[in-house]
Length: 316
Ligand SMILES: Cc1cc2nc3c(=O)[nH]c(=O)nc-3n(C[C@H](O)[C@H](O)[C@H](O)COP(=O)(O)OP(=O)(O)OC[C@H]3O[C@@H](n4cnc5c(N)ncnc54)[C@H](O)[C@@H]3O)c2cc1C
View (cartoon, rainbow, N blue to C red):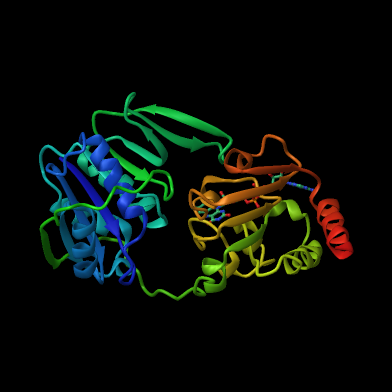
């Protein structure tokens, strides 16, 4: 048996859901029988029916408030709905939520974990995952069974199914553990301008100092219609607002063109850039990980590059 767990916020079924379905089908030799999906969240009923219709996989919707419970308690509750025997693989998308839930599930199920998977080769049963902040790619022999977390954008989505899977919906009861959430506070919402933009120009730690951001803003303004983004360290340092953050804990863009200025290309950052995006990277390091996903690599010092480009545009 292969199980998928899909966590949803709101009514939105994440795009990675169909990538999880694709991985499950590849691990199961294209058969949907022997695969079950669990969709959990406040709108799990809607999410479960949408997923079952799209994938053809039998789906259990578990209605619950994901933010109300610590991850360990959620994992204990989820384990109780998974098959007690014969579960070979458990697949989740690689999100901050699953980073906490997956290890607890793996320990409870007695399965090994392969986190942050960025690819799978069926012929050799090999998982690929990145390590060392994206500087190396690990080739992992697929264990006979395991808890796998999959990076969004790693695989092509499963094709739409002809037959709808069966749907069951019920509430998920989560027993309180020793750790309690006392309160939660909302963070700024994602940047709608960023998520809908066709062109995104993003800046990373390579900018050097906060003062240099004025040059970056002039550079971005010179590109018509471009939205501005950044890597997480700039948000953490208070240089850029959180809605500009691209990546797994920021916004996932849908742009046709992504220009990465002084960004190394960590897996967490790349998770916000879908496959098929044309990526231009400007970096002085010829071995920067971002180059591996770039269509155009500009090996240059960032500040002189932006100044020279602005001067050139001014003459046009
Ligand atoms: C749980 C978790 C979630 C995370 N979520 C996110 C996320 O959503 N988004 C995100 O971005 N990160 C995220 N991170 C952080 C991530 O791991 C990286 O630390 C971060 O993406 C690195 O940002 P950076 O590329 O700007 O900085 P660095 O890795 O420091 O890279 C700076 C780059 O600039 C280049 N450079 C330096 N000077 C110059 C110059 N003068 N000219 C040209 N190039 C230059 C360097 O060669 C280098 O490649 C997360 C981390 C964790 C643990």
